[in-house]
Length: 319
Image 1 (cartoon, one colour):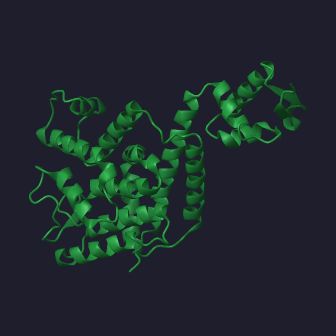
Image 2 (cartoon, rainbow, N blue to C red):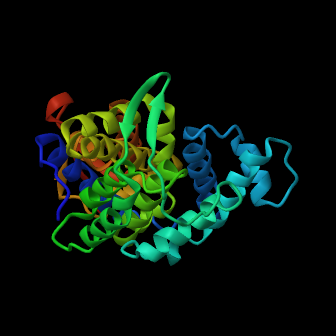
Image 3 (tube, one colour):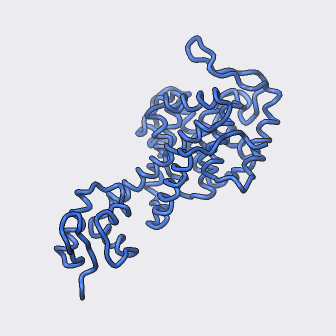
């Protein structure tokens, strides 16, 4: 049974924008991150995902734990980080359609933190904020069946991976299959699903954007609960993914010199082009930076400029 959701204009717009950015990331070979950058982004991911759950350790302390250095802090928080490091290091070994792998990941993530990690709950649970009950999960007896159906949905090849990952994240949170660790498992498994088709998600810390405004994350979950379908949460998560990819492209663009940007642009440019064409290739740049790049290329004799202001055109300099 396919989980309920609607395809909205917002979802289609986000899918288009994300697809364009993924194409640009592949064109720039940004999936070939250096070991150092991969490590830095893994730290950001672990820090953000656990911070959402109340973990107090800093990125510097997480770095120290990765490097097997002693860290002073709450033992529970340290154990959470050590477990998360072990799980994220084996991200590539998880099959996103395997319920057994899912349970094994939870066991590794929650080892030493709860009783019977890696096992579905055997009692009823609810989410309480203050004195209000925000969510009552399905009865424990329904959990194995509901999760089996959810994993069957993941095998549907007619569903877009981007949407499928968001649906799984929401539905798993709604089922709340574990006594603890549901939030971090939802975010982890969405990454596992996404990286199957898009390797860039192995080191894209989209959790950082969630942690900056957790209220929006919980509001999206609550809104989908209220509507009885995952539409609102899909819209929210796709916006988060889109912003994360934009940040990655901006980071990559800033690392390029103006000469490198010009060279990359000219490798696929038309005979004549405008500043707007250049900005479409590098939407992360400001118009002023784009103008400086093009002016420098003209001054260096690489480009020729014709026209003025809105009629300005550029082309490769004659040899």
